[in-house]
Length: 389
Figure 1 (cartoon, rainbow, N blue to C red):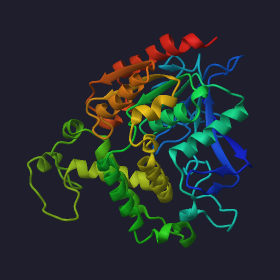
Figure 2: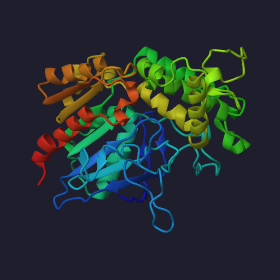
Figure 3: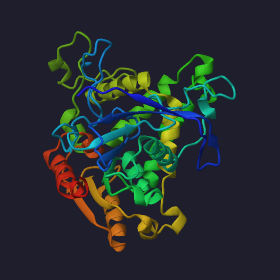
């Protein structure tokens, strides 16, 4: 399945929850499958922190040939014959404003200055992203979605859709998510942000104007985040306390625990892995985008306006729900999903819940797990499909 990104320009300014207004802006998106005659089979996929509109399929080179390893981030979930079957569903992936994958964000030009927005890009929230997505659906002629689906931060957007536009969502699939972040999660985000803003190359967020990039800070931020996405069991299974062989060294010698006692050397395999992930991330992700998106995570809390009463906050929702959690996900634990389930049931909403006993931690929502994929497939085929012609 070869897909091509599309760009939609909006000349009408977008009012933001912060009180700021984003002037003319663009959203990049991709679609998969075909919209049916009565436009009732549309499924919106909301992306997480470092993902994008490229949800599934492959991109092509200038000759139209598929590019190797260009699969979308949920390629194992969405496509012909998969859990979200694009032979039946018209799937839409939208890159959020503030991102660095095409939609208007900090790396784009501020029309007021002619310079990159940088740190001057306005603060955005989950609710702002949902408003922007709704405008795109208006242009596509989709009045109501068969489903909104997302994992992690994408799950928060999904939940927000059911509250901001309750009549436009028939089903909500919320995976590995939460109704708000715990203090511990906010703390992890803050440490990562401090790594970025204290990088000497950050230049108060205007590094593009200075001709620099805060790669060191981004590397550390990604390493911190990656630790929280994996479970302790997975890290022990993949890396344990195995030492990394030095250049030219027999790996067996490193395994004999001959420590080099250096503050600079990469001695353990887990160190090497984290540095690799950090290096890779710093080459493609924007630092200001990281700051914006983690703040949006921190701010999301639909119960805030209801004195912390989640049941009262979710009373507006009209959709039917599927929630999925993973037992070893300590960043978005099953207990957080069960909070949402309880609040929905208190409002007599139709809710299905699957708690998957998986060892992979938070990353489980992106990985292949037959039970997880079967639960989503069953929900789409047996529950959502009933309302589609």
